[in-house]
Length: 69
Length: 431
Image (cartoon, rainbow over all chains, first blue to last red; front, side, top):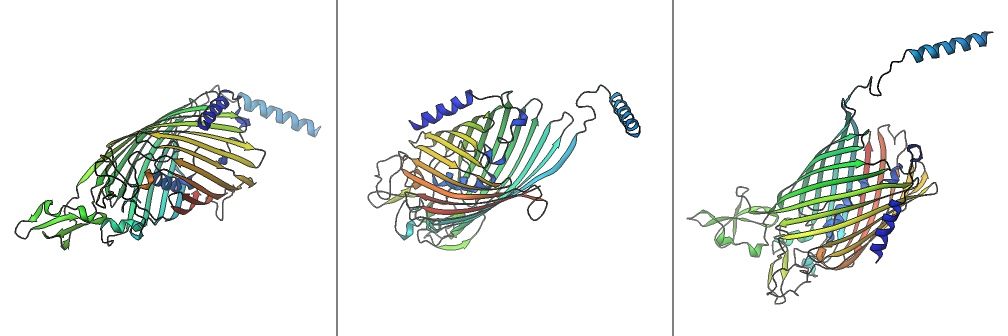
C-alpha cells in the first residue's frame, strides 16, 4: 500500500510543478540535492547488491561479474 | 567643467564601442576547446563482514560455514571535457578499479578448507558522452571490463540518450549489456578426475581445476603431482540485458524528484559452480538455478531543501523478479550544512525481501527438487543500515588548490541472517 502511496505522491508532485527560472535554481543545483548516488557510495551499493537478492533502479549495477564474496 | 569633459569622453567611448560591434550571431567568435583534464576522482573503501553462513558451504552454521569477508576497493576516474565546433560538450571518462578481498568460505571450495581464500578483481572503464546544451539533448556510449579468478571476464557495453524539456524535466533511456564467462570451478568432491582429458595416457595424468581456479596436475587416484596454468578451465556464459527509463523533474525552487524503471533480463548459468547445497539426507550437491531471470525494479527519489541548511534526500525502491523475490527499500539521508562548504549527512536504510522460491536452508532441500540453492542472498530477510558522511568542498580547495572535494562516509550494515558489516569510504575529487 505504501509503495502505491509513494508512487502517486511522486507523480502528483511532478505534475504540479511550478516553472523555475535559471536564477531561482541555487538550491536545486546544490551538490547535496543531486538526484544520483554519491561517488563515495559506489562500493557500498556494490556490496549491497551482492548480499541482497535485488538490485537496480539506483544507479548501481544490475548484473555482471561474479558477486560471490 | 573637468567632470563634464570626462563624462562626454566616456559617452563617446561607449558609443564608439557600441557601433564597432557587428551583427554577428551568438556563436561568432566562438572557438572550439580541445579536451582538457577536468576532474580526477579517487574512491577507496574498506569493507569488513562477519557472518556464520556461506553459500560455498550450503548455508551451514558451523565453523565451516563461516561467511567472513574483507574487501579493499580502490578506483580512479579521470574526466576530460572539451567543446567541438558546434558548441557541443564532449566528455571522456577513463576509469580503473582494483579490489582485493578475502573470503573465509572460499577456502572451503576445497573440502579440506585449504584452498586460496583471497582474490583480486581488476575493472577498467571507458565512456564518452556528448551534450548539446542549446537543444538540451545528450547521448553516451560506454564500455566496462572486469576479470577475477573465478570468471574469465565480464564485458559490459552501454549507451544512453536523454532530452531536457522546457519545464525543467529530463527524460533518459539507457541500455546496458553484461556478457560474462564464468569458470566452472567445482568443489573438490565434485571434480570428475577420471573424466578429465588425460594429458599423458601412459601415466594417466589429468589436469583438473582446483579451488580458486588454479590448474593442478593429478594422477588417476586424484593426488596432486604438479601445477600448471596450461589448460583452460571450462566455462559457461551469463548475459544480463537492462533497459532503463528515467525521468527527473525540478518541482519548485526547493524540491526535485526522479523516477527510474529498470527492466532486466538474465540468461545463461545464473548459479555459481562452487555453491554447495546439502539435501535433507546429508548428501551434498551443487546449487542449480533456472537459466533465465527477469527483474523489475522501480526507484523514486525526492530531495527537498528545508530552510537554509538542511536537505532531505529520500529514496524508495520496489523490486520484483521471476524467481519470486519481492523487496522494498527505504532510504533517507539528512545532509546538514554547517557552512556553505561543509556538510554532515546522517543516513538510514531499511530493506526487506521475500525468499526466492528455490531457496531453503542447510539440509532442507529434497533430492526430487529441480532447482535448489542455500545462498542466503536469496533468503527472506530484513536489513538495516545506518551511518554518516562528511563532505568538504571549499572553493579554494583543501590543503591544495587542486583538491576540491573530500567525502568520508561510514556505514554499518546488518541482516537478520546474522550478517554484520562495516564499510568506510573516502572520495577525493581533484580539479
